[in-house]
Length: 397
Ligand SMILES: *Cc1c(COP(=O)(O)O)cnc(C)c1O
Image 1 (cartoon, rainbow, N blue to C red):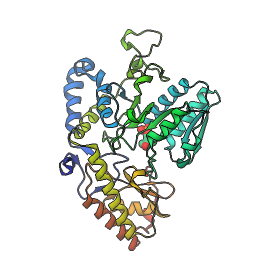
Image 2: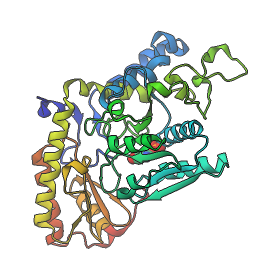
Image 3: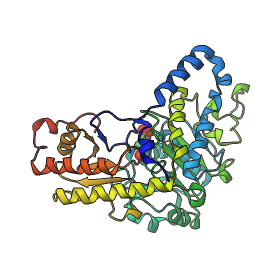
């Protein structure tokens, strides 16, 4: 059994704060500052450029990728770190479209994170081959997978509502129709057990700064199914994707491994932070995380609905169809969230009217969730949100 009191001790959480936004930016693991200091002083400081070999920086994107691979059911050597998630979406989609040259439809859903859709749109414009980004309602994805679809580009858990797609089922339908499946695991990796190999995903991508706690701007990951390693040609063919970067050939030859999804020089300080942050998973059983996450979500839904009858639950009520977050709709949701943050409960807001609460068992307990619901109840009962300063929109919501 996972000891959640012990995992909580591994995180720095400011006094008086209940943090329900680890699905946006995970908190600081206590081990990270020391690791960053060590990497900066002992490696960068003392080794200078020899750190690439002596400290093993050059392999860090693969080593850390393998650690994330264990959480998502990916075999060793099939995951690599680097760049941002938006870039990894672009890479996966570019490779997938090249692998289905006779097809023109990229199928996604209206619950997907806009950046994934923007990247698809930009790629389609650059290709200029008549591809179409087809968007349907999340419930309509399966019915729209037909023989025109080159690939489905789906975020397993919708960032706004928390609706969870059935990866295995949609992937199976895609394959039956001759299409490929790209899964964005931004709200899955570290949130519940994922099995990219068992689920048949052709590509998977995700970020490390949400449930994996790598810190703001931490690098993203990309998985390529082992059978596609050679077929997946990298569209962003930077020198680190080359078979022999230090041969300095004038022609690009892709690496015969997942390294072909690398682009340029990896962010070593951020990777060191992520590597330290990954230690917590050595003492965690993913099925315990899932069970506790469901418990926290259900407790929060029950306690908030009891106190806040004006809220509408927009997350699925059925845990099977929900990720690890709870979202409520309320017209003045932005002001309510500011009032809540003012009282030490941090969630976030997604336009136009959704309040999101991430449930992260590593450092959030049932007591926290109970207390957060009580504070939210007070804000609603006493209309504490109804103040002009709570309506002022910040740059990041
Ligand atoms: C968080 C998130 C992103 C963010 O992408 P970045 O390039 O890391 O800023 C993209 N897609 C999804 C589905 C996300 O949840």
